[in-house]
Image (cartoon, rainbow, N blue to C red; front, side, top):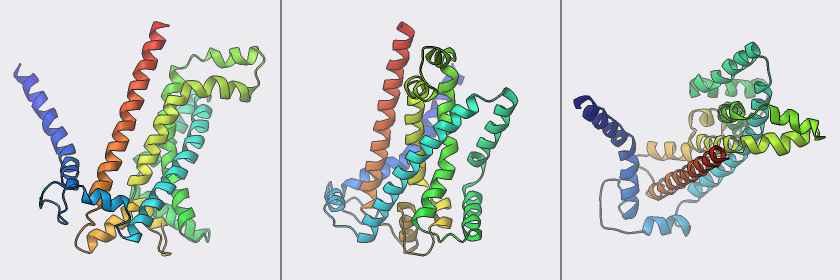
Length: 267
C-alpha cells in the first residue's frame, strides 16, 4: 500500500516538474506584464499584439521561417523515412538489424555533434549556408525518427496482403499505394508530427547551419533575445498556442488510433 502511494506521489511530482514551467508561461500569457512573474491583471493584449502585427518584424520573420522550414523538412523526411522503413522491413534479419543500428546513431548522437558535422560538410562542399542548408540539416536529423515511427506499423501488418495484391494483378507501385500506405498511414502521420515538432524545437543544429545572412528561426531569435537581457512578451502567447496545438493534434491522433484498433479487433 505504501509503495503504491509513494509511486503515485513520485509520478505526480515528476509530472509537475515537467509541466509547471509550461503552465506558468500559459498563465502569464494572459497579462500585459513585460516581465514573466509580474501579474498585472487578466488581459489578452499580448495575443492581440501577436496577431495584429504589434510585434517586431524580426519575430514575425523568425516565426515564418520556423514554420516553413518545419513544414518542408517534415514533409520530405516523412516521404524519405517511410520509403526507407519499407526498404528496411524487407531486408534480411541480420542486414535489418545492422541498418536499424545505423538509423539509431543519429538519434542517440548529441545534437551539437550533428550540427558541427553538417557545418563542416557544407563548408567542405562549398555550399553557402542559409535557408537551404537549414532545411537539409532538419531533413537529415528528422528522417530517422520517421523510420522509427513507421517500422512498428509494418511489423503489425499482415505480410501476405502485399503478395495477394500482386497476385490479383496490381503493379508493385499500385500495391504500395493502395495496400501498404493505408496500413502505415498512422505511423506516417505520427512521424510527420514528430518531425515537425523536432524541427520547430531545434536550436543546436540550426545555429551551426544557419550562416550569417541574417536568417533567423524562432529558437535562434529566442536565444538572441535572451542574451539581450529579456524575452519579448509576445513569446508567451506564441509558446502557449504552439503547445496547445501540438497537444490537440496528439489527442486527436491517439483517439483515432484507439478507434482504429477497436474496429480491427471487432472485425
